[in-house]
Length: 154
Image (cartoon, rainbow, N blue to C red; front, side):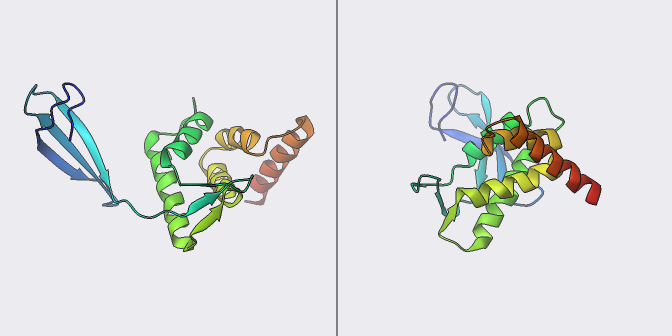
């Protein structure tokens, strides 16, 4: 592992811990050259299905891309990074469990919106406004009415 401070390749692991689900290993490392400490995370790499975009092109699953979108939707909301990571972990598990080699991005988008509506309603509306590309205020209001109606059904 390359030291982020000096670039030296030799270091030692000082501490290792697993997360609650035993899916990620957090390692504290110490550089043999400069002595600085840094943290690395290890996660099992699994084959994710390819995503089929609106224009028909295919794209590999990119966890960072979905995390970035969720961070923007949840900005200044009471949603922690741990909740976002857990949300994306669940999404990845759902994709893997589908057993499909290719999944339409429309399906993934709907799964994200379904989960966000339960996680944080404001984040849901923010994500929906970008994802659904509302053409006017009426489409936006229809989405809000649907959200309010679903709350009343509970």
